[in-house]
Image (cartoon, rainbow, N blue to C red; front, side, top):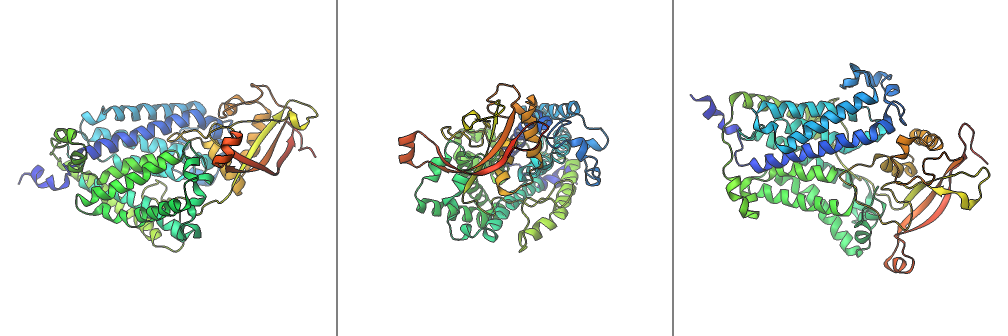
Length: 486
């Protein structure tokens, strides 16, 4: 018997476009994540960062992590080498260079990226403690086994990626239904567009939509997250239709918010349920390209993918139980390799927006008018400034500033204030504007404000995007090496 013919069952020869999107899309997001680490990691958690990695690696927990820093002592220079190398390999995959080689070459490239990014995210502490970090890690591992251009995409991996999207979407839907009552009574989106961590240029317009639209928006979200994911496993073209619904909702989230690469990688992964015929039906000019894919399925490739599929199925048991658990965990990893994770987002919705405004002054005995605000790149500050678009790039310091009023651990913030008093250049480069042009301020303080979007009438009358009201002094004025004033 011809073993190659016998193993053709393992090849999904009508998913060549899906593989093209999955490999290059995940690699593009990985490239962005590595570049983000190059720009932000040293200042946030580097040798002289707000939460230094060398200190973190002294903990017993850190010594059990599967990261390169256990054998290769951490330095900022080595981090830049790791992140820079990851960006180069990722970009090569985006160009399709490894895919022209034998099937194991792209596999090795993606596994290297998986281990490299795992080593970065595992020691990033609170600045890398986001669900989409584990999502990227898991995606890099799973996409590694899609093969090269001259072999058919393995059906086992295609379904493993659909299972990943199912956990992502259904988990998010269930955490909403089990969490905040506003999701159940369809009022969550009365607040969400205004109070989300980092609004974008469209967020205010979305917030000002009629409330009946917000209720329909919430109902549609529940349908797509709680019902549609089951149809990702249906025969075609049903699976492609289900994927299209997920794609549409993710595109709306891309348009209306700044959720780093969460929605972008979800868009990419959802293509695992889109076959070539469906692509050809929507984009007829691609028909010749999508009907001439490879059909070969080497025995060695089948063996590897079957083993990987079995491994992912075995590791998925805790995540599957979590989906039906009354005490569902959100964005949790059940193994140190960050595979088969639990996902979810916004199990509760903040109904009011508080912002920490950090200010400094050069005056020795400052009057109120002497205080000047530090402006961040993305988070709201100046009420006249329209929110910007930064996703899929992740502004980590800005996101942590959103969590600060919610009672999150503020150890990093105390060090951040010291860095401002020192006029530390790496820290200042993370900001949008330093009012002192690199000069050391004499004092730094922080005030808490309540923010809301300006109504259309308020916008016309004042030119403001935000209306804010001071609540209280969060941090009394501090001077370098001294206790707070007052």
